[in-house]
Image (cartoon, rainbow, N blue to C red; front, side):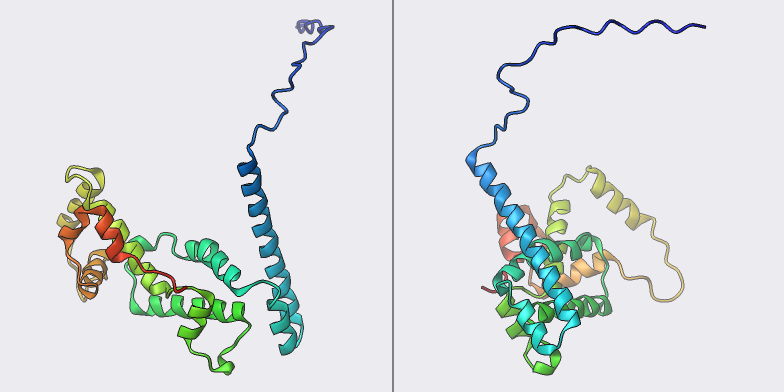
Length: 217
């Protein structure tokens, strides 16, 4: 079996005179936004280098290395990248008090490390949070759960999420001992602690204001 011959190679290829496929059509605002993003990544790289230097030096060197980046900028990066990653998926967690305690301890360790402080400095957690500009992560978890609860409750009754919720309630089989903690119990507790009612979720703007937890400035 013989393969067919290759097609003849064209002698002259047409070239686009304006080079429209290679020209950058981004505006000045887009270019400036990209520069700011690159600057943010550079700051993160500096913070990582500061952490490496701090891990190898003495206590004085630790504090000096972490002063390279302003504390407010560290807090902004933490709120944007780190806390968002920690809170991913927490709106559906049936969290227990021990889980909230572990998450809160991990957050305070990171915030103290960002400030160049330790527990031996005897600085209160509230002072550290105010200096960095970060609200307690446990309160942010409550905000995430209530926000997602509002999204689900505003859906029609025949929507897929609402039908699955009703189906799970009917098919629940009670076993021996105390039943496992469910997301419904957590939501009910959150509503009671914040003096909220299920009927308030219909007004989306009002609901967002009621559940919002502001970061200290």
